[in-house]
Amino acid sequence: MLKLLKYEWKACARTCLPLYGAIILVALINHLLYSEAVPDLLFGIPAAIMSMLYAVIFAAVFVATAVILVQRFYKSLLGGEGYLMFTLPVSVTQHIFSKAIIAVAMCFLSCLVAFLSILLLSHGINPAAFSFFDLAAVPYVLEGLLWLVLCAFAAVLFIYLCIALGHLAKKHRLLMAFVWYFVLSTAVQIIGMLVLMAGGNVVSESMARSIVLFWKSMGSGAVHFVVLILCLMSAAAAAICFAGTRYILTHKLNLE
Image (tube, rainbow, N blue to C red):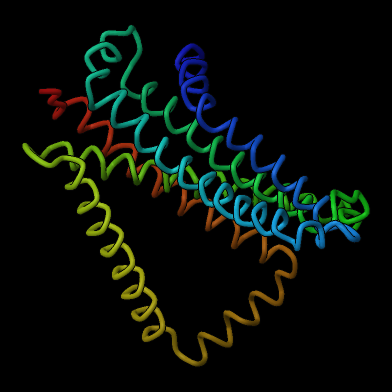
């Protein structure tokens, strides 16, 4: 498993890390160009060019991360490399998790780099900007991060499931993966709306007042309870997507 993670990290880092370094460098140059009288240099042309370059690289960071997320799973397990990968003494579960873990890590790393570039572009990194955090907020921050991680895993595994379903087709497999993504995501949205509408119709006015009183009595515990429910829902979605993907790769895999 560790060797799979190492191999996957190297494959992703070759493309992503140069982009991450580039956006930090361009953000720093933009910060310098827009300081004091520098924007008037050569009628502001260098500053305008660097601003456009920053916007292009900013978009490229997220596009490249998304493309690599899809490419690494599709080519390594369902493409030509699949013959080699499935001969390794590791399970299908380990293959899927190694891909998902690195994909989630790259997603968070791209968001972190983008956030740092915005700080550099605006006013530089000032430690005083983080002074509003206190110890009381730590549990909420940790719970929020856990939920974000689970959401990221659910999103990545959902994409893997769509790719695996698309691979069941005899032709145009990549196109069918996009079709499955559109169909399943639309179905999830419709089901979610129907559940909300049904819940709104079932809950009476007296029941709604009881729920409000219950939340008020819980105080800060209500926030922890809501985050717990969100975490369980995200974990369940990730588990369903993982199970579907694993089943297809185990019983329906066709590399021809």
